[in-house]
Length: 226
Length: 335
Image 1 (tube, helix red, strand yellow):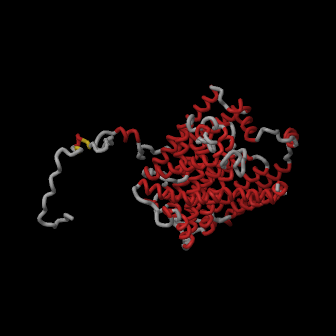
Image 2: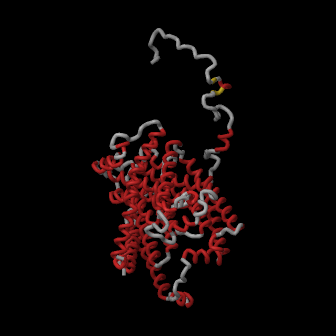
Image 3: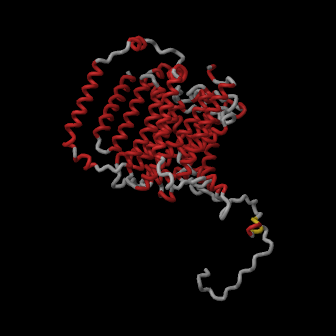
């Protein structure tokens, strides 16, 4: 009973926050509602007994992806009145696109059934002693390891592409080369000096060879000698 | 009694009682951590630290809390009110929430779940929201800059922290925190995985925004960073959240590397929780020691350290660990 209440609670909050994502006027609020939606989806995963997926959803989407979304959206300088200005002009086109997408969804959903195997698997009890983290690990990293590696490789290529695209104009940017700084010889050097030993070659002897001359008595006290 | 505990009401009552038994000492610990930090910093800088309120100044944290309660809560006129009030609550709640899975002794965890370490990692990665929301909702340049810095910093250091956790998990073969500690009965992981311990500790400093990585609140250029507009209790919640997060990170380091509730050399196994608390105190002392010793990092150096030093290093160490486990047949679970 508690599980049912929890399910309806999370599902209701999920749908409500999903609606708020598209209807709220401030984009930052939209992203925050999106995060709330992710969170509730994770809770639904937990209720379904898929604790690994729930945690990964929170770590990857809420903890990293949405942070970057928020980061970008906060820095956008959006003029809200300008965005709303063309509403009447664009509304018919937007409505038409939305209607087509909705129709497609209806068609897909109408012809959607469980696969034979999936339907049979659904009634099987969960194997005892194998938690779903272990099961996912076995399937992903043992049974389908090459496909997994291939997916990783594609992501790597995409990442390198993004880095190459953003590394333009390198000649003008000044960057710090720490090894060069450390190995530099010249005006300012870093020396290891024994405590109380001084540095003879630049004239600092410790203990002092001869006592420093006594300060000269100044007759007049003008000229900023304070 | 057992029959009552089996009913939903009983389960709820038991959980609330367990949570109280954990959170009340934790909050007192947070209060005394602020006192201890000021005392230690004082000693390291040849000062006395708080010494007026109560014996050795030990009532100082409560005096501070009372002072905070008495002050006026100021909400800036341009602020996004709801978010502005929510941000410190998020920070504080998350810092408390993570403690649900921490095993203080063998079997002493409120929720001994299978994916405990992932839960901890997830909660600690959410900590950034309190800061970002605070920075944005304040509608102030300094707060916003602090929030941006902290977002980039926390996301960066989470990556290498993730690799450290994966390395430990390889040696354990389970995501359960109690199992991780039990795997260290013979030898704490700090010995075979010492470099990862160092990376974990430094990443924990960055993750909790502590010196020398306290750029989000760098007072010399950002006044107080993301909480510049906060006053009274909302400020106190940020403060408490930061210190509770320090304790949480110390607990995580203790569980992953310092053998949780086990004493050194299997000494006095009956004193499990005491060993756990002592190890946390040791980590916290080093947190404060680092603050007293190192100057603040420059922002580009911070990013360089995270992405160009820690990330490759932890990745290589992960591969080395995996290879060693495979070659010597030490992989847990007999795979």
